[in-house]
Image 1: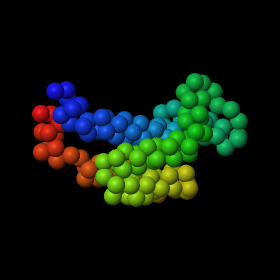
Image 2 (image 1 turned 45 degrees about the vertical axis):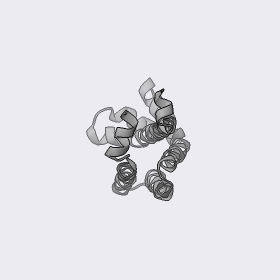
Image 3 (image 1 turned 90 degrees about the horizontal axis):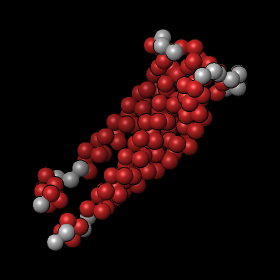
Length: 154
């Protein structure tokens, strides 16, 4: 018998994994696009590029270089990218356990508000830690048990 016939949930597990990975990757890219300039300024590395990107994003003038242009594009698309990632992650959790949809969406709202609805860096990073932490906790809660893993392997 084929593996798919022995465990019909294998295809659903792959789809769930793809949605989750795509969602988390999009959220991380969004976070990077929003936070990289501030991190670079704080570290003192690439401060002029990061500062130029920050001013360009708010209409003060264009910034130079491919790196600054890339970060600027990420910064501009980050709200849409984050909403898409929240929906993908929530869909992935819904495929695993329906009870996790609302907490996953709530964590996504915390992420969105912490990144896009305020300017205080402490609140921003605390909100990101809380949102990503909630997603990690939900992932650990919905992981298949050891017995289910044996069923899939065997």
